[in-house]
Picture 1: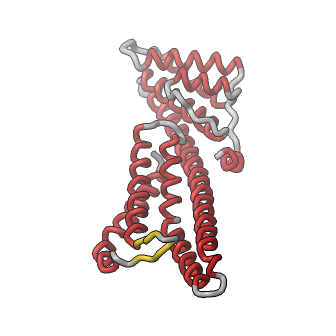
Picture 2: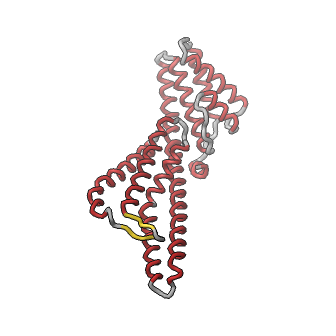
Picture 3: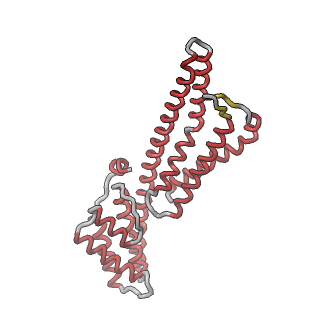
Length: 271
């Protein structure tokens, strides 16, 4: 989970906390309502809908902890619920204005137009709120991808540094594992820039996704498969030799040198 996702969760929780703090004051106006097309809409309905959407938003964000995918559908659902929650108060405000307009028309010679005007304004405001929620979800999605890309970049640099230190200390198994982590971060970053969502996060699934996306050439694919085999030995009970560690680091550098990365503008378009 990125820092940006954590910030979204904190902000949604802060809004929920504010709603609970306002609950005692809302009790004074729990009977406040207005009539819209014959239906009574209470202020408490807006309160409950807003609280429910924010709670659902936090729930979807929390479920992203169970997924290692760069941009899972759970996070997109959370972004959409957040956008809908933001539009609850403007939506109810639009319905209230529509009811006022219908009341004014009902008292004039255009009384026949009152129900139609209220219905058209209500539907229009509903459509507008959905469009705004989708736009907000798209913007949050772009920031999610940008934050994830930066996280992968930091992981790649850190893993390369750790691999060199571990090799110098004679920890060849850990050196191979950190080298693979650096390559893993670069591949995920490149796939993320192309808007490709991984279905499998294991090394074989990652290599398959990179091959399908034409991220690696045949020569690089051979190095990837070689590094994968060395990683499998490193995470097993079989010790790795110094030659294996040196070979893995050399393969890792060669792989990283051939994997293209797109600029931030392309990343934003892919989101």
